[in-house]
Amino acid sequence: MTKRVLDFAVFVLLLLAAWEALVRAELWNTVLLPAPSTVLAYLSGALLDGTLLDAAAVTARRLGVGYLAGMLAGLPLGLLCSRFQSARDTIGVLALGLQTLPSVCWAPLALLWFGQTEAAMTFVVVMGTTWSILLATADGVRAIPPLWLRAARTMGSRRLHTVLHVLLPGALPAIVSGLKQGWAFAWRSLMAAEIFITILTGFGLGQLLHYGRELHAMDQVLGVMTVIVAIGLLAEQILFGPVERWLRRRFGMTA
Amino acid sequence: MTEAAAPNGEETAAKLTLRGVSKTFRGANGAVTALAAVDLEVAEGEFVCLLGASGCGKSTLLALVAGLERPDEGEILAHGQPVTGPGRDRMVMFQEHALFPWRTVLGNVLFGLELKPGLPRKSRIEVARYYLELVGLTKFAHAAVHELSGGMKQRVALARALAPNPQVLLMDEPFAALDAMTRERLYGDLQEICRKRKKTVLFVTHNVREACVLGDRVVVMTPRPGRIHGEFRVDLPRPRDINGIGIATLATRITATLRAEEPQEPAR
Image (cartoon, rainbow over all chains, first blue to last red; front, side):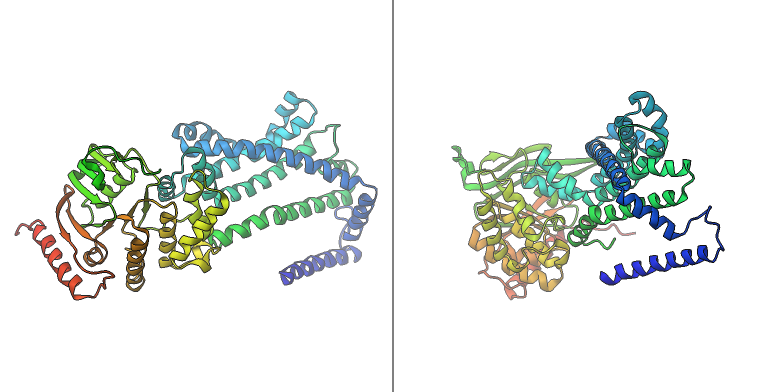
């Protein structure tokens, strides 16, 4: 594990060193791409004056709320689709369609419906999250071997108990990969929404990036991009890493 | 389900009673009569093997007694009460282990116990551990299902079926997918467990010797439509050895009956 972390660190450092060297040798126009040291200077400044942390906190809160709401909608609807053909033919098909729609397309309507509010932001995130979680849940539950259900029935499992103790845990590998995909979509949706929708109740990472563009401060744009990538990587490791390791241990999957 | 006071009548003697049970499956290729007017009685504490080639309806019969399927005609009684669905008094063991991979070995044995009302968590774990010991898997309580061998998985499935303390054990070719050596060891274990726990067992198999080793009685079934063709009482002392001469003699006799029953191929 430590070796793998080390490998990655060395790789990133080499990449940055090469980039820095190219800029210093003036082979590269700094207007187009500032040096890593410039970006680092921006980052440390923004970190110290609190801009970055405040923006990250606002973004994290929006993401958390939207993702949770999307999950709370996606899981039960997915379960519904897994059990009833009529739900699959209606909600299921709709979900399949809406999943292909980049959720930032909802931004104009969200602004119209909710105004320049947090609700508009949340709505766009929910529209990005729900469908992939719904579809993964529906497919995962449908793929459960009927024998598990028969065995559970003989032991006295019924309705809600079967849902909570057989269907959901049985579909867990599929649900977790759906949740991961939902997370990725939520993250993308929120960044797009923050860049497109200007609201006054909070100043997120996306908005920080947007103003970097307006001011032609590419060090800021790159700095915020770095933070976005770092948060994404961390979330992946912290949120999904342990769950996936547990799944591999229990289910014995090599995936 | 606790044992209800036995209703008046002659049903009390038999643990399981099937009267005129028929079952037809309707599929894309027309209707298949899986069982036609089957009568069967299994006494309390008796080990009955249902023996027959595939398609003779023996697994269907088991599913009916388990309450997983409903008969089209006839009636099925367990402890004198009509079977209307699955019940903890009749636990099932399948050919495939049907264990839940998201639970540990112990967690699987606990599944049925968690559904038994009025059992505190501590006693559930005690009971589960007792049955794990009975099948010799104490050391694997916290192992994941996929880490076990095929034979060990079936032992866990057996412990899981035994844990809620059912009066009747329904076994659908539980050892068919195992290698011969593992299987033979499990024959010994199963006989020992049934002696200790006094279960009424209905055991489905297509293996003649297996039926002779395990059963107090071997009920032979024939296909198209599934019927009971005859039965053999196995009066051999236990524990029985699958390679013993007594088993071999009986198995030969049963095989001969089955052969005689096979439809003659028309000459071409």
